[in-house]
Image (cartoon, rainbow, N blue to C red; front, side, top):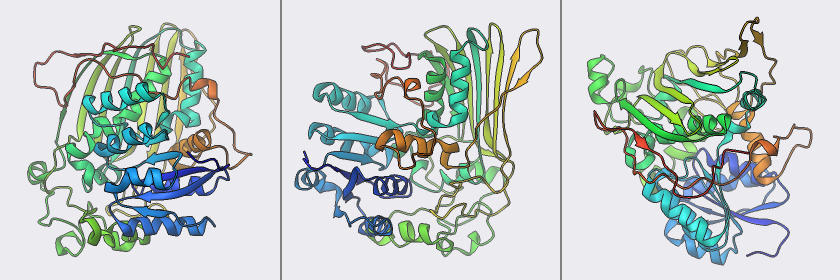
Length: 445
């Protein structure tokens, strides 16, 4: 490992999300982006331009099949993994074995077998692995945690959680690699993992029994045909049928998307603007889950990926009252996907064009309801990203309020349940029993 005062970092996977980490590392004096690893030289060159804009030196560029050579030859201390979800373990495991600190985008991986392999490596090496769950760092979510921990509604008996992705953001998962379960594990893994982690953290508890159903009811060829929405094209770029399709994404209209994807197709053939009503699509767009937690609380959860508006509602029922959170991230969408940020984010890095509000209401028994005062941030993931990056890599802005570390009790993931879960479960299947393989709960502080 490096003996320099700067941590030598490698960023693996140089797509859109990786920009967040490349920029964050370049802005912090204690870190040095020494290497980039990706199948596409074009995408790596784009990230080197980001480093140059920040006044940082260029990183060396490596193909995935030379990852272990990169670790040794570049004397890497730290690896940030932002690849396709199903490939996370391919980089996490050898990086841990090489003695590196590893930060990975969520989800850690896509199935129980890969999860066990990763966690066995963490145990055997004793090295550090952090999963970047940025929603814990949203100040609104911290307020919910504080109220519940302080007993504002007494014992939490049940939770109802509904998350809505609109027809701009939700549709985007069906244009890209996420639409195939072999790559993403499905939205229940890739997207809902955020939400399940929040509830575990809010309740300081973990699931014991889980049951759920999901279906592809809106996107994909069959549903698109059934609803009269399907157009006859494979990808939007160069397709006449896509010209007035409200679900089409124009990669050429945005400099960042063009540079990261359209210009990079020559390298690896990855197509970023697929028809959401074309095939293949093997993930669900409508999912329902019922959970029983170790402490006795239950949760009903629903994810919709084709909603007119975007946001979420979470309701906690307790022995002394009820706590209700409603976040309206976008009230509606106009019928054409437009880019919401300079970094090419389809759903934006700041407030959406038609953003609504945030309301947290405490309803105690026998007393009037109280609207809880909130600190909100029109930053990525409601302010979660910059605060998470401060926690991971050190603060870049001393004036920004820090996340209270005592509320994030551990930076490691529990071992996976004994059962191997598949989604969706067959009709009539019993719930998965999520008994722990070893160790205490990481959610109790």
